[in-house]
Amino acid sequence: MALKLPDTGAEVLADGRRMVPSAARNAGPILEVLMGLGLQGRLLEIASGSGLHAAEMAGKLALDWQPTDVDPANLPSIRAWSTHAGGEIRAPILLDATAPDWSVQLGPWDAILLVNLLHLIPAPAAETLLAEVALALAPGGTFCLYGPFLRDGQPTSPGDAAFDASLRSQDPTIGYKDLAWVTGQLGDHGLSVRLVDMPANNLMLLAHRPAVVV
Ligand SMILES: C[S@@+](CC[C@H](N)C(=O)[O-])C[C@H]1O[C@@H](n2cnc3c(N)ncnc32)[C@H](O)[C@@H]1O
Image 1 (cartoon, rainbow, N blue to C red):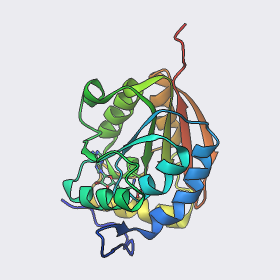
Image 2 (image 1 turned 45 degrees about the horizontal axis):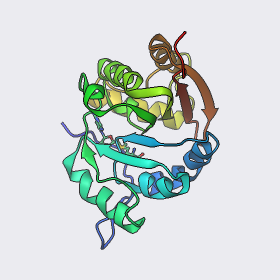
Image 3 (image 1 turned 90 degrees about the vertical axis):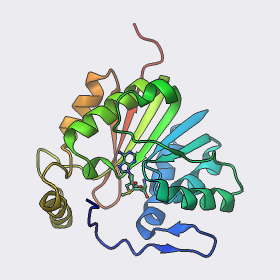
């Protein structure tokens, strides 16, 4: 069943790029955090959606950027954004990030970016996703996870409470994940986590895999 999400105001431009206002709004703050990390090498973007983030960020970060999404219908827009950006992004590939063992085929990555997916999938699927991300990270690699989270089991604003409730009313297995649960999962996989406050009560979790296992 397709989730009914709040109207994003998305529109498709003549060249096939899907313009998503929320993605355009958070691209700048997310880029600013990523710029501060000194990332180098290969980045895997999970759930690229429209492809706008890849186009806005890949060139400025000088990263070898691999966009992916589970939905084949998103690939044309990702390709169109890539063309618009001068073709500096790899061709998008299909990836269900909640499938077991994808890291065996796809890793290792110096960085992995995931924006706004965890609240849309059930907890067991999120658990598999986080485990696979940890396996797919190269030593010294960083997982950048952006989105809304519960804090001590509570939403952080009336708007977040309403969105979380609307998700759960459509599917009781999905909804915002608790921050402590997510950081706990990442810690269990050997990643150390740092939090960055982002606009609109969102967070960026920066989960680092140690360069050398002692
Ligand atoms: C809310 S959109 C976010 C898109 C993009 N990251 C952004 O911020 O604009 C969620 C995206 O997750 C993708 N998605 C849903 N389930 C997924 C899964 N199991 N594996 C990978 N991507 C998935 C959807 O196709 C959609 O593109």
